[in-house]
Length: 410
Ligand code: LLP
Image 1 (cartoon, helix red, strand yellow):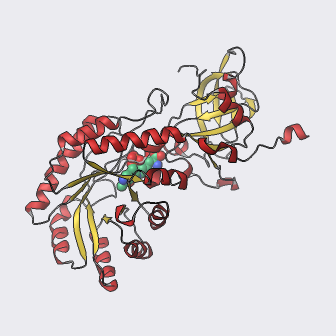
Image 2 (cartoon, rainbow, N blue to C red):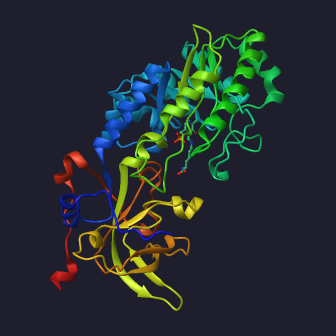
Image 3 (tube, rainbow, N blue to C red):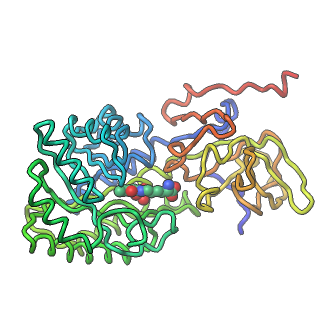
């Protein structure tokens, strides 16, 4: 593994970070804007509609930035639907997926008049139809299909295989078509797919998805259903190894693959639901080394951020690049050492990275855990009764909470 001596953060920013209480999530709003602009332009070029997957990061400031660009929202809970709407996404551009929508969640979304429920079971379609009938409404419904495609990604974020709980599988298609036919209070608008997340074999996997989708759309149309919307879900992977080399993921390959492979009639719209790829690289979890401990066989850097702040390493064994920002400010390159970088939580899985080669690190050093804008803050918890790490935005950094140095006060 390479020794990490560099960072893209400039000395002014690092100086500014030194005065802020850690841990905190730092968001580079300029990178977010550049990413959103690029997605917007490429989507127009390839005639795709974008629904941002709110689950990746639901911070109000970030949602407002994205909704201002005219994107729709993909939500997976009633609260996400309401929050997205409050943050500027028009109701008729909000779609709502998820295998387990409660009656209350369905009711609120229906009253709001969302674009579509992406339904994941026959029973759900039945319940939505019954509820819509009770309210004297007609609800737009898209059906999520399990296409049985391997996304070649981590098994916890693979969603399109028959072994996964998502979508409706082929053996129920006859019953599905019959149910849609007789449900008077739903309006069938299309098909929805999402095969997984952090997909890095972009051209290959998404081409496979499109070909399968073409077959399925044709099947449903042959059976008398008009498929107006084809929603291909999200899943574009980001470069966790080299966030500075690849700050904006490869939307060009993703969108052009879809444009080339998907068969669409003039009245059909094709939708995508990127989450991670829009927000991951603009976020960094900033933490401090609290203690340096020499173990029997290794050295530990004990940080003030833990698995409660970012669960991805503990849950998926995910890799995040870690930089010692303070060391990059020291006048000479110090020697380096292998560290197990760990958090403070009382769990052995609370490890940021094992055997990472870093410049010699000392108590108080600022550390950057990179590519944490997606599935970071949203998955944080208060385990061990830790406080939640706040968000600090590059364009309003002066609002950040100030660090209190108890150590110096002693
Ligand atoms: N659409 C649906 C229906 C989804 O379930 C998801 C993500 C997306 C879109 C957005 O996928 P993305 O573009 O972000 O890959 N917590 C995991 C990722 C879970 C993804 C869940 N579904 C992680 O930290 O890797």
